[in-house]
Image (cartoon, rainbow, N blue to C red; front, side, top):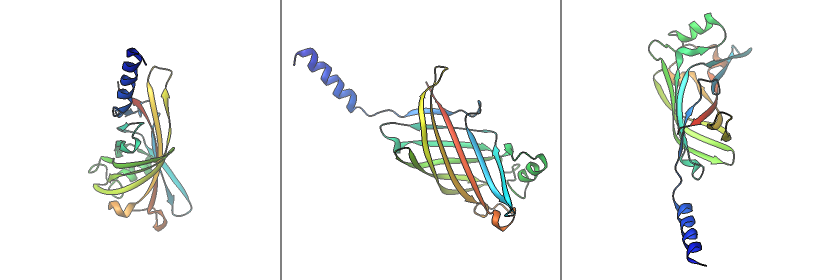
Length: 191
C-alpha cells in the first residue's frame, strides 16, 4: 500500500468512526403533510372522528442511532374539528377540553426503540392541564429527497388515552372513555 492509499484509508476509517449527527426536522403541518386525528365511540353506536387542524413540532433522528431520536409536538386544542360546528363548540367548552383555560396539548418524547420499521415511542402527553406517560406504537414510513430540493422523513403512530386520566369531566357515555389517537408526521430536514 502506497502513502496515498494509506492516507485515504486512514481518512475513511476516521470518517466512519466519527459519531453521526442527528438530523433535525420541522413537522410539515402547513402544507397538510402531517395529521393528528382521533376517534371515540359515540354512545357505543358508532365512531365519532375528528382531527386537530393546527399543531407544530420538530424531531431529531440519527440513522446510525435511531433509538436516540426525540420528538416534540404542540397541539392547538382550539383547532379541534369533528366536521360539526355545534359539536366542536361543545368539545371546546368546559365539559371537555376547556380550551379557554387549556389552549395547548403536547407530546414530548422521553425514549424511542426502533426495530426495523416498527417503533415504540415513550413520552409525556399533556392535555387539559394534566401530564401522563404514554406509549405510541408506530412505524418509520420512509425518507428521501422531494421534488422541491428538500429532504423529508415520515413516521406514523397510534395510542389510546382515557378521558378520566386527564380530568375531563364529560364523556359521550361509559363506553366512550377511551380515545384513540393517530399521528402521521412528515418532517422537512432543517439546513
